[in-house]
Image 1 (cartoon, one colour):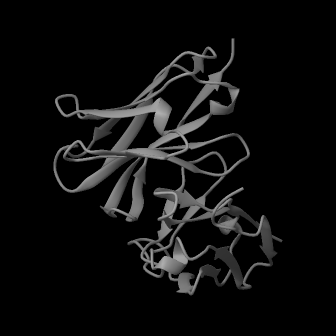
Image 2 (cartoon, rainbow over the protein chains, first blue to last red):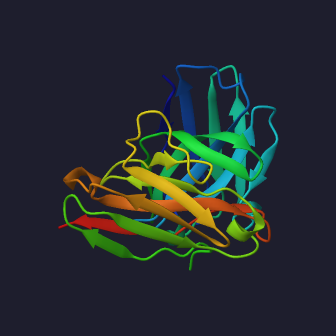
Length: 122
Length: 111
């Protein structure tokens, strides 16, 4: 059974960089054909896809965040990471990591982490 | 404002059938991209409910069904139960935005 667990600071100052890690257990992050993804949800609002990294290391980002986002993978630690720069209060949200199954635009998220709340405040 | 439009709320009594719509456009659902549905219980992560427009993952009751036509999709829940009370989200891909997109979510209340 695949499990995902987010970790990282729960409080980030405005203009700084938000950094989160998602550790995958129950399977190798480099095996299979999966898109390891980040999705966020502001309190009381809907879901927003941030971006994804394929097993091969190629990345795709939401154009609305692309200039500030970097997703990377560390296969030796079986985890992937999110960096979001120049954060503002609008980036305050619960951040989820998820496994994407499928290909290109035909992607479903079949496993999710429990989510971690990141608050941007001074 | 979400690219995929869902009603903010729907409700039904136990045992009834409810449907939740997801309206898109020619650059997403209408372009042939699949629709996926997720259930999010309070305080928890979303759970995949429907994939490929109408397929249920193992373990999802057959009370849940999905369909797609033109630029819209629907999630139907029959035999409504108290534990179905949750937020429901549709998801697809938008070729104009080059992004995976979600609907704004629908809160289901079981009366």
